[in-house]
Image (cartoon, rainbow, N blue to C red):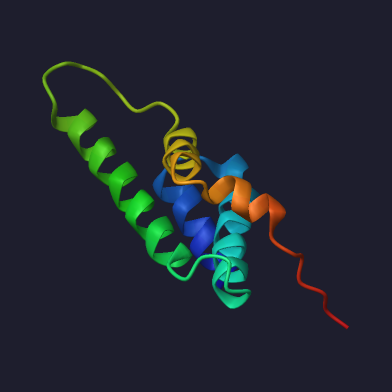
Length: 97
């Protein structure tokens, strides 16, 4: 499921080289919630994805000609501003037997 969502984001953002990054974000949000590090991590990721989508739509229809060239970077920036990227880096890894 996570891999499919990550692939979908990569396709939507025309960023095929970042599938692993999007999957890492999703797994990070899941870990943050499961470990009690951030009870709304998935909600914040969804909010950030929505903001990127809005920015992409505005850049397509806007008159200023400002395009979003790196949607993944915008997503990372939004999550970093809220401290989630650092939290995901520090979150305990999942161990599988």
